[in-house]
Image (tube, rainbow, N blue to C red; front, side):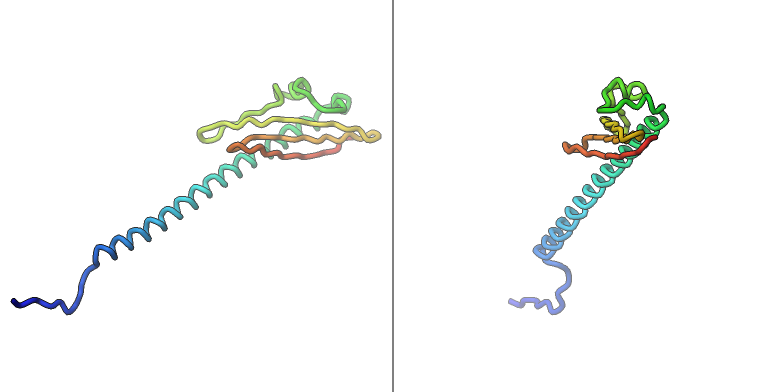
Length: 138
C-alpha cells in the first residue's frame, strides 16, 4: 500500500481552534467586566453630581432667608418645608430609576454671624453617600 505524505501542513487542528476560542472568550469576559465597572462608576458620578446640585440649591434658598428666620439648632422637616422641601427630601429621576436625597442642616450662631452646615445623603447600591457644605451668613 502506498501512503501519501503531506509535506506542507495547511490549516488548523481542532485543538488549536479550541485554544484560540478560549483565549478570545477570556478576553471578551474581561472587556465585559471593564465595561460594566465603567457604567457603574459613571452612574455613581452622575448621582453624586446631582447630590452636589441639590446641596447648592438648598443652600442658596437657605441663604436667601432673612437672618431671623434661620433658627439656630438642627433643622427639622417643617424648617425645610418653609423653603420648599417637604419632608426634608428631594427626589430626582435618572434613566430608569429615582434617587431620594435626604437633607439635614445645623445652624450655629457665633456672635452676630450664623454658620449653616448642610448635609445631603443618598443611597446607591446599598451604600449611603453624603455631601456636606457650609456657609456663613451675617
